Image 1: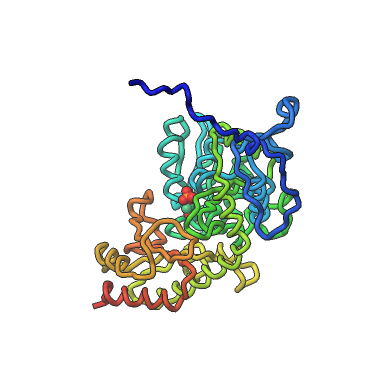
Image 2: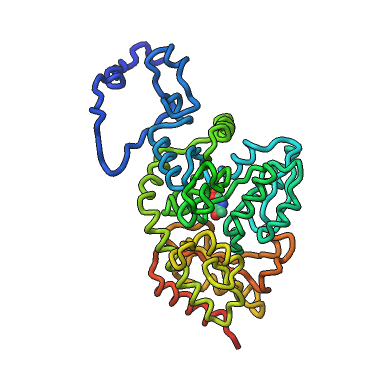
Length: 418
Ligand SMILES: *Cc1c(COP(=O)(O)O)cnc(C)c1O
């Protein structure tokens, strides 16, 4: 017999729960800001909805276009890097992609340093090429080469200081000057400097950010690294000081539907106050480890911009160490392991480390190690690099002494000199 469904259970009314009249008082002050989550944002009236200006931060229109949480993070990141406008995106790579997709069109060319973050090169060789946007790689250590490669089609020049993996520090002010002279936009991947080692919008250190000062046009930052500091958030930012350029980026950002999760923004807001302390700690540990490596016969070359003889050391000094001895240099360095050791031996050395974990990214509490195949990453083997196998270290927040003991045991076990 068919069960009678006409007597279905009465749905309890929760309307009063959803439309509850209580609103908490709006003065709540505490160290951490509130976390606002929304797709929908209410307008008091249709007229308000129609009039709402969504291109600036005067109000709210939709979660994707900003909440109090994301506005706050954007403003704090502007103060970190010395910019005026900021956009948040779901990863550091998305920040690089947003810049490219916002300012480049078919027929344009983008110049990328040959030592750039690999996925930025892959984006140029993939989507950008498919869209009819060409790219060329320039020698990051030769401003003359950059000038030579700029053509009337060049619309964007990427800069990175220092280059990912091989850590050459370029003459950044000179590169920016050359872009300025030719009227080409320049965008810096500022993940390493993080707004702490130098100011991307005040490259001469004259405090005249903005008018009269030497500045990049755009600073892109993988917040995944130092601003997050936990190895647990993926996020990126795109910072500018030009309202028209920001609007161009913002419109593309909106059309692509890029946004970040409120809890991720909260995590970065929670970590930001300690970024200065952490950056210095990562830096000091990296220099202690780099100094240890320099004394090892297995090290054919040390690539750490703060060390004499490292590629581009003088440019690091000029930009980051204006008062000698006070400069900052992040927690990242590479070592060229002498060519007498095979890739298999170097791999065994990395596997033999106990405190250093094998993994990408950096900026978190745990030290990381990755061997890189430079030959496959560059147009040609760079003349300033010794032959060998490159290993990149990123220091976490462990004690330098413990990390050196760990390096020492694995070097002795896997890279014997005899
Ligand atoms: C990590 C990194 C990126 C990309 O950041 P993700 O958040 O991992 O996408 C971009 N540039 C540099 C220099 C980086 O180190």
